[in-house]
Image (cartoon, rainbow, N blue to C red):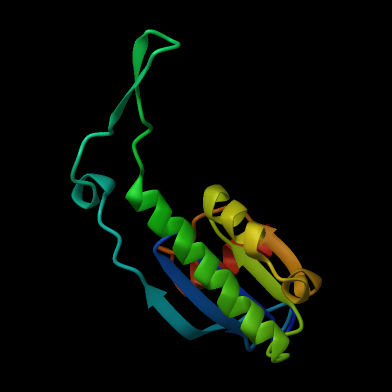
Length: 146
C-alpha cells in the first residue's frame, strides 16, 4: 500500500488508538504519532455482577435464559464509535486528505458502521490487522507491504 505524504493513519483496536501522520513520502514513509489514547476496559467477568435472568413462558412450557450482556465488548464497540467520531470531526475540519485505517476485523466493522461520508470519501485504505502493539517501524513496513 502506498502511503501518501501527509496521509493520516489510524491504528486502532477496542482499547487503543494511535493517530499517525506520514511526514515522509510514498517511497519512505515516516509515521509520527499525533495522538495516542488507551481506554481501560477490564474483562467482562470483572464488569458484570449477576447471572443472566430467566423468563417463564406459558406458551413454550419451559424456561429460557436471557442472553448475557458482554460489557467488555460493548465498551470496545463504544470506543470504536468514539474513534469514528474523532475522524469525522477532523475530516470536517479538512485536517487530512488521505486516510488509512488498520484495525482488527471486529473493530474495523464497528468503525465502518459509524463512518461519516466525509471520512469515507478520504479513506484510501483499510487493513484488517491488529497493529496496536507494534513499534512504528514495523507498522510502516506492514502498511507498505500490504
